Image 1 (cartoon, helix red, strand yellow):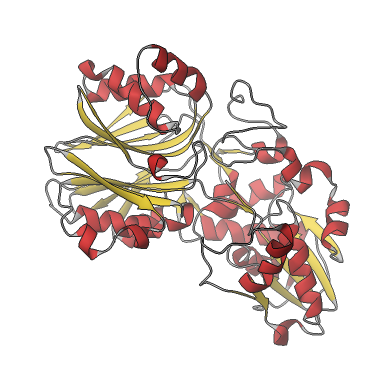
Image 2: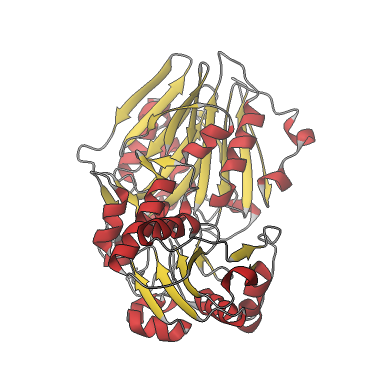
Length: 470
């Protein structure tokens, strides 16, 4: 999803799951804290499904985790296992019907699902299921997965999940809860992240390792691309459903989506951002007095740029942390003015200085232009805008809602034209090769938004110039 106020992509969704039949931990509270740590991945809705070993119950609502849950709500939520979800709407509109986890009763029993990502063959499967008599209650592709599982119910839950996963295509990290099992699934390309943790004898699944840290669990490993992980009273077992897999994690997980304290597919997110900043200086050097970063995801890259250049890193922009998802700016004019409310310049550090401003990415350029203007107004004599990622030129249909290339300034402007648009003294983007060098990994990445080449083909009826779903 794209955030017009912050001129940034949004972080899709976050999932969390815990199985604690032996330890009998407070699974509801642990899921709450896990979701709290994943709040950056979704702020529209939050939900938790609990299993007591016999039945499932789900509590969810619109808003932040702390708005949906409190001690009074959590106290009666007792069980042996749980899954949780925080959401931004990608496929499906933003309303309570589409809030997750989804919970349904089938011949197999009750099943609940939480899903991060996007399927590219949803419409075809949904139509086939409807022709077979399935009734859908939401507009999410997560319900498609749920109904596929139900169709194979008589074969048992494990086989049903395998057959459902074999039928879908796209980017996904899924957690599934039955009365006695916790199941995690990652797409064959590993585009969306999912990891395994352990707390005493309890197992945990989470979108990011920072959620494991939040509940003091130990990181075990990442779920492999194309792997189904099944956790029950017998422990944990793995099923590989895809013969040919290649880990191609979304590049923006490292650039912007993930929390800097997460480790994802053996890559420390913070360290990769520092290295990106260092590489950025090598590719786009400049003479200046100070380096500053755009809070929060541009700060690590700014530190790296400072290390490589020897130019002192200073705090230059102050972010108002008390403005959240409810901050409204209904018009483009007010939206641009809103940048001053969300971000202010520390004038004492920038006045009379040649400033290097580091951001993680540029999407539309609206906020970038306003930040340059704020720095000049605060007395900066020069503003050099450096971007710690390659130029975003193409849409994504794996969980980021970009309906048109027209929304991407890099799709129709050169770097020099972008520089003119934002009124900086100079601009520099990290090259694709430089970005890959900063990751220091012997694996692949989804670079579709930079190159226009994707691990999977576009959904039927979609084009790279106009995509309605993500």
